[in-house]
Image 1 (tube, rainbow, N blue to C red):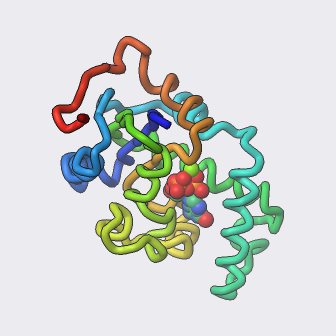
Image 2: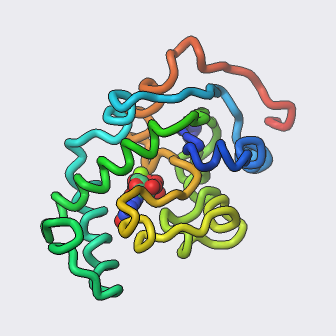
Length: 190
Ligand code: GDP
Ligand code: MG
């Protein structure tokens, strides 16, 4: 039940000086901060963080984009040169790699019961418009897929958080050496 999960405050979160506020929210929920570092990653690191071979992720993002375009009566073929979900996902991936390597980010590992799901709940929905008030994305972001796709860039939604326990197990060692993860007891743990 005790899980570890990775969060990365994206470049927009750092330059908006929301790092402290975001970390505080997780700490106050009872999650234990066991690792933290600020770093500007290169493209190679971003590529590993968002692996090209995670087909389900890129097809899902491609389908979401197609739905959005249909709603907005935009022509994917004209604007993106394709209507294939995987190909569109791959385009968004390139925007995402640019975004994540565009400035310093703040990576941290939080630990606690159901940490992965709890952290996702505190972050809120991927799309700022669908994220509830009280969540990090709901309170502090306003970007949309329509705006982002039009600007040929990733949606600015302040934070990345591991989506599943398996994702966390893959991502944490990408960002932290084992020796950089601390073990201690919070005073409120009992
Ligand atoms: P997350 O786990 O909530 O961050 O969402 P995903 O793993 O599905 O997507 C990764 C990131 O890609 C998101 O946080 C956004 O920054 C970006 N993104 C997701 N969907 C879209 C989209 O349809 N268009 C654009 N431009 N960016 C997207
Ligand atoms: Mg994700």
